[in-house]
Length: 559
Ligand SMILES: CCCCCCCCCCCCC/C=C/[C@@H](O)[C@H](COP(=O)(O)O)NC(=O)CCCCC
Ligand SMILES: Nc1ncnc2c1ncn2[C@@H]1O[C@H](COP(=O)(O)OP(=O)(O)O)[C@@H](O)[C@H]1O
Ligand SMILES: [Ca+2]
Image 1 (cartoon, rainbow, N blue to C red):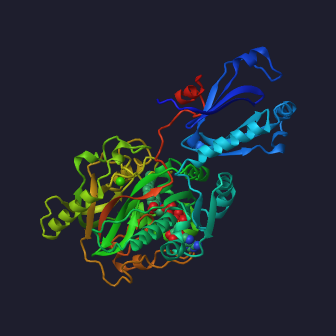
Image 2 (tube, helix red, strand yellow):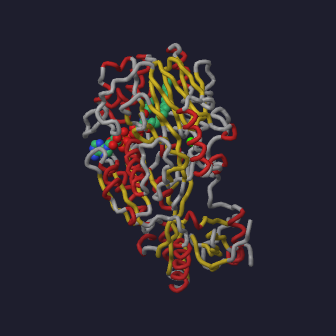
Image 3 (tube, helix red, strand yellow):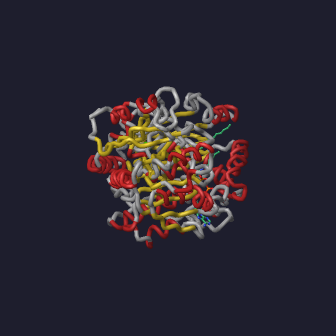
C-alpha cells in the first residue's frame, strides 16, 4: 500500500488519555502514547494494550468544534471536564460506523487540544480534506411519498435523515407529494435540475419508479432521444438517486445496500457512494410503456399485485394476504417467450457469483457503440424472421419473472435471482411452468431459505439481454392510453381499469416494479447502467473499521 504523507500530527487528548493523532489524505488515526501512560501525566492511566484506531477520511461525515455543554452529563464526562481546563478546546469528528447486517450508524470521536489555534487547525485541515471528496452531494432534491408503506415517510425523513444531512452541510429542497405521479411530472418538466447533485426518494419501489421515470424521460427529452424507439441508445442520467426506504417491499434499496434502514441510506448518500444500475425498457408494438429496475413479473407476481392494490389500506401486509390468495388460485397462463441470451462470459444465473460491492462482472461494461451495433444487427435479423440467436419457448406458465438484479428484500433475503447483477446489462428470465400446487409451494419456499429455487424440473432460468412475451390469446386493443399507467388517486385502488376486464382469467398482468402494465404483449431490452444510485452494492461483511488495520498502522508509522 502506497504511503501517504502526513498532513497533520499532534499530541491531543481523547477520553482522558494522551493520544498521538495523525491525518493523511486517506486516514485519520490515533494511538495512546505509551510513555505518558506509564509516567502518568495527570491524565487517567489505565493498564492494557494501546489500540491504534482510525477512520478513513472518505467515511468521515463532518468535523465540528465540540459544543460546550455536550460533555457534562455522565460521571466520566464530568471527570473529563476537570482536565478539560488543561485541554480546553475540543473538536468532534463524525464518521461512519458499521454495525450488524450492513447497517451503518453515525459515530463520533472527540479530541481535546491545548490551544484554540491547534483545535482550529485540526478542524480546518479535516474540513479541507472533506471538501476534496468531489463525489459528495452538497445540494439535493428530496421527494417524500407520505402514503408509502406504513405512511411514515415524512417522519422518517424529518427525524432520521434531515439531521444527518444538516450535520454534513447538505442542503435539501423537500417536496411532499400530493398525488401519484407528482414527483415524476415535476422532474420531467419543472424541476431546475442544474441546482442539484442528486435526487432523493423517500418511499417504496413504486415511488422510486416515479423518480426513475421522471429523470430518465427528462434526460432523453433534453438529448432529443425518442423513448418510443425500442432500439434507441438511451442517455445515462447525470444525477444520482438516493433511496430512503419507507415503502412496502423496498427491494431496490435492500438489493443495493443490504438493508432497509433509513439512517444507513442517508449515510450512503452523504459519503456520495455511486452504484450504476441496469434499467429495462418495456415497449408494446414500438410504443414505450415503462422502465423497470427490479421485477417484471407476469402470472403469480402480476396477480399478487393486482389483488393487493385493492387492499392498499392494509399497508405492507397486503402482499402477504394477496400472496396467499393468489397461491390458492393457482392460475397459469399460456404464451410464447422469446429471448436473446447473454454471452457465456456474462456468467449464468445458477453460478454462485453474487453481485457485491465492487463486483468484477459489472465492471465489464460494453461500450455503447458496440452495444448499438450489436442491437441494430439483432433487430434486423429478428425483423427479417432470422431469429437464430433468439430462443423461443411456448408453454403454460405459473410465473414469468425477469429480474435485472437479485430482487433481494426482507421477504426473500437472497432474492428472486440471487446471482443476478446490478449493472451487467443483463436480466435473469425465470420461467415457472404449470406444476402442482405443492411443487409451486416448494419453489416459493426456496426464496426464503438457502436451497436453490431453480433446481426444479418445472423451473428454467436464462440470462438475457432482451426478451419478448406474446400471450396465447390476443389481448383487447381498447386499453386507454398505451404509454400511461392507468390513473391513480389517493388510496383508491391504484391500478384498477386494466385488470377488471373479463379476459383476466386467460391473461395475467405484468407487475413492473410494483406498477401494473396496461399490456400483456411486451418487448423488453436491458439498458446497461442507465442510472446511478447513492449506494455501493452489498458489502462483504467486514470487521469494524476503527480497529487496527494496515492503513491505520501505516498512518501512525514514524516519518
Ligand atoms: C412460502 C413463502 C413464500 C414467500 C415467497 C416470497 C418471495 C418474495 C419475492 C419478492 C420479490 C420482490 C420484487 C420486488 C417487487 C417490488 O417492486 C414491488 C413493489 O414494491 P413497493 O412499491 O415497495 O410496494 N413489490 C411487489 O410486487 C410485492 C411482491 C410480494 C410478493 C409476496
Ligand atoms: N401523495 C400521493 N398520493 C397518492 N399516491 C402517491 C402519492 N405519492 C406517490 N404516490 C404513489 O404511491 C405508490 C406507492 O408508493 P410507494 O412509496 O412505492 O409505497 P408502497 O411501497 O407502499 O407501495 C406509487 O405508485 C406512487 O406513484
Ligand atoms: Ca443486471
